[in-house]
Length: 288
Image: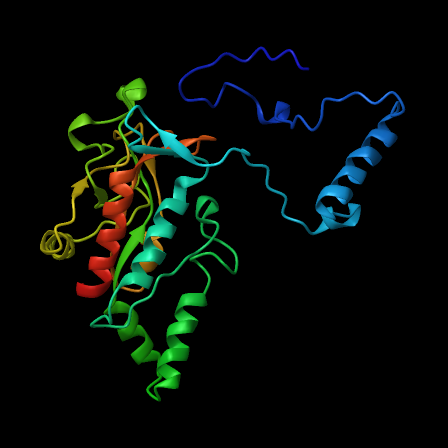
């Protein structure tokens, strides 16, 4: 145990220092395990028996410690979902289901699932990699019409929804939101015309014509949607992969499910919003 003298405030940054963040690995005391070396051996032995993990595997493994509980109903009316990691599984899942359910689209459509968005979309599996660009180039090559100009034109003529969650209004932290321009649970999928920090810094900003086009697609398919920003200016903020896709010249806007307690061990979403998100993504893929 550590005697932590940090005070708690609503930002959470000064609540617990990263230095003191440690895992409660096990609590059963074994009298035969008396020295640190033997304790480490006991942990390694347990990992070997339960997960077939060798000590050397830690040199290359990506070990993630997450809450063990399953997703569950939330609320007196069970209208919400409480679960770990809904940012951004809730949008990834609905996007994939929409792609699987849709009929033959008017244009070539895809669902692109990328990694490491929270750390800048870096690496070979992040949106900053050339994976998507290379895939489109391969398609053009297979059609016998590849050129650098054709690739650039294809990407710039594309339309995209950046499927990422938005910050749902939380009364406990009401001072962090602008109530007239916040997302609320149960009111449908959220359109974020822009994200960023301190207003629009570091964000994509969808043009008015494209926002109108997406609105029409949703209206024609009777999709419930709302518009919002990511928290109050100079207080809230955030980012997605939208600005990276916009570098190709394509039209893109952020659209996703409103979440309470984003990035917390347990996040909360509305079941109605999840359904509307799937409905919205399907309508976009078929009609945009």
